[in-house]
Every structure is written in C-alpha cells, then in structure tokens.
Length: 252
Image 1 (cartoon, rainbow, N blue to C red):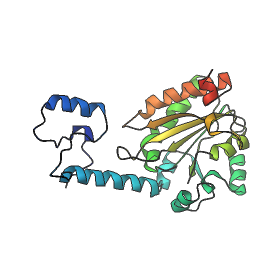
Image 2 (cartoon, one colour):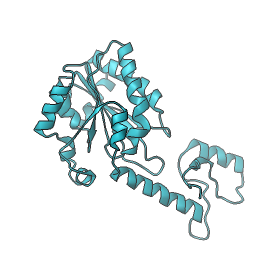
Image 3 (spheres, rainbow, N blue to C red):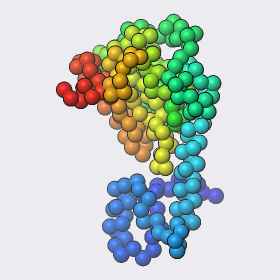
Image 4 (cartoon, helix red, strand yellow):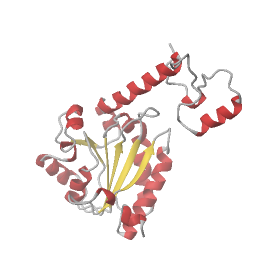
C-alpha cells in the first residue's frame, strides 16, 4: 500500500467541480495550508482526513523519537547529554534539558578546542528526525564556509535531550566568542524534519532570549540545508564583526 504522505500536499486536490481549477492549483502552490480538500456533507473527505491523521502522528513521533547512535557516529562527532534521562523527562522538565552535569562539562572541556571564534554543535530538541534530515549537509557546509572566511570553529558535537539554552553554559565553558546551536524545531503538520540555528555573541547564563539571532525552518520543505548554511555563515561573520547578536544586531 502506498504511503499517503508521499504525495506533496500542494498537489492533492479533493474539491469537486471547482469553478476555476487552474487558479486553485496556483493557490495551493503558493501555500502549505490545507485548501481545496473538499467535504462530504459536514465532514472532511476520507483521504484528507487520513492525511491529517498521518501528519499529526508524524509530528508526535518526531517529538518522542530518538536520534539513532549510528547517525551520530556517521557524522564523526561525539555525543553528550543533558541532565534528562529520556525524551519524556526532556518534555516535562525543560529546565533539565538546558543543563549539563558537572562530569559532562568536564568531558567537554577536555575534548574540545578552547576559545574559538564560533562553537558549533547540534541537538535533537523537539524534532529528532531533523538531525538525520539536515545535519549531514548543513554542518559540513557551515564549517567549510567559516574556513573560507578564516573564522576559527570549535569542536562540533551532538547533545541528546537538548534545549536551546545549553548554549549559555557551553559558550562560557569553552570560551567561544559566538555560539551556534542547530536544533530540531517543534514539528507541525507540514514537516516533521525542520531545524533552527540559534546564534549568540558571548552567550552567558544571564543573557536574554532577545540576544539570539535565529534562522528557522531549515528543511526540504523550507530553507534547504545548503542554502541555510550560507546564510548562517554570513550571519556568524556579521555577529563577530559587530560584536552583537539578536535584537541589538538587528537595530544597528
């Protein structure tokens, strides 16, 4: 049986007797919203209802699934984890998903380059599939771009059960001028593979959320990884030059 999610939702039209079918197709190409799905009486038709249920299940799976160890090993990086022992604890105790045990901090300190211009790492966040879908293209492209701009990069690694604000501890621990964490976004009904990049100049425990510069919706359904990498590299270079990030950088 064919997977109902394999067909692009913008190509799925279930509305019968559309007054202007060509214009409907143009509208669907311009948005990921579920338009032109038709109805049977007061209810949705079977196919769009099944597609909705499948996309909703994929979003839930993306939150609670694990990044396989072989995926991390293939990327050639080491793995650490936050204080959380599993995904359920990460969801229910987001504060633990921001913190690292002392022994983990010691391990990082011993195995990473110190005082780089940019410290880059990635985490599962709220969308584990985003790691396998994006990082194999995204991470090397960013590292190559930084090298071409003569910007030193720290040792990349993977953080399991990761929240964005691990950046506040890791940046200070490794003496990074700029921190950049690639992390899975909260999934929706269009994609369960999306990732964001959070960047901050001199990240520290007392920094504000507004001090992050963010590139979001990195995925095959949004900004492709290689294209996103080029934009991220340019932003990192600008942050280093201006010595600001987030709202302060935007308001210059």
